[in-house]
Length: 105
Image 1 (spheres, helix red, strand yellow):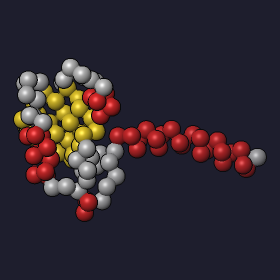
Image 2 (image 1 turned 90 degrees about the vertical axis):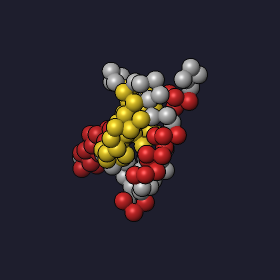
Image 3 (image 1 turned 45 degrees about the horizontal axis):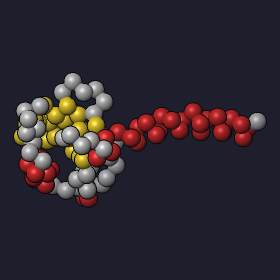
């Protein structure tokens, strides 16, 4: 009986933990790249930066792309890997895998 309750408790908590881990960056501040490096990443991608902030432990760039579309980009703080690009009106954003498969950008 104890074993069953323990397993059920674990299964109940597991999906919530996985969902939280998906949106957050867990990196010690000592391992972060400087904000200037994030600004340089934006410039290299042709983005105009309105604001760079920290959200859920990740860098977040708010700005516009070369076509003038408003965007929000989530960047890993230590690797500067682009984790998500979200355009205004796009509720789901585009993951790195989505962008790699896109041939008309």
